[in-house]
Length: 271
Image (cartoon, rainbow, N blue to C red):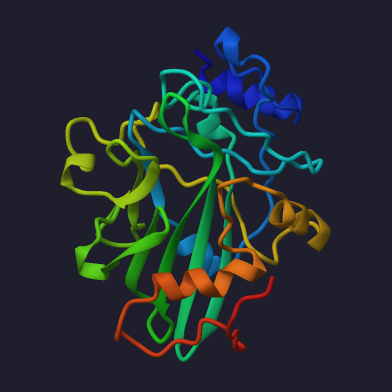
C-alpha cells in the first residue's frame, strides 16, 4: 500500500502515471492519466460536492492528463466491481470538471466525475462512466436552494434542508457514489449512516473534493475539446455543449424558480 508521503514524493518527481498495482489479468489496461491542476471560478469551488465511495464502487480519476492523454477505462469482466479502480493513490490523483449557467438570479453549477468502468455483474455494464451533480445557487445571498445528483438516465433533486452537509457553516453537499442494487452505479445523497460508524468508506475516511477545472479554466479550448469530443462509449458527458442544457433541464427543480437552461447572462463566471 502506498503511503500519502510516498505519493506526494512521486508526484513531485514525475507527471507520468504511477503503477496502480493491478491484478495480473488487468495489466493489459492503461492506468488513468495524471491529474491537471488548473483553475475554476470561486463559486464552483465554494459549493463543490464532497464525495464518498461505497466499498463496491470505483474512485473517480482524471478523464484527460496534462499531455492530452485520454483515459482508456477498464473492461467489465471479472467478479469484482472495484477491480483495478479503487486504489488509495487514486484519491490523490483525480480531477473534477465544472460548468456554470446563470440567469434570472440563479446559477446552476454542474460538476462532472469520470470513472473507469460501470460494473453491474460479471460481463454486464460498460467501460467508462460519467456521473454529475448540479448545485442550484440563489445569487442574491449565495444560498444553495437545491442539489441534483445523476442516477442512470435522470436526476434525483432535493432542497437545501433535505441535504446532508459536511459542516453546518461553510459546508459542502455530501454525495456518495454507490452500486444501485443489481444495477450499475450512480450518485446518491449522503445520509446519517454515511457520517456514523467511522465515517466515509474510502481509504482516507474523509469526504473527498478533487482538483476542480472550470469550463474556462483549461490551458486551451483544444485541451478541453479533446475531452469533450472523445467517444466515451455508453457513458455521456453532460457538461459538453450538446448535452448541457438538456441535463440542466432534467436537474431543474419543478416550480421552484424561473430559469432558462439555454442562456448564460452576464454573471456567468468566465475565468
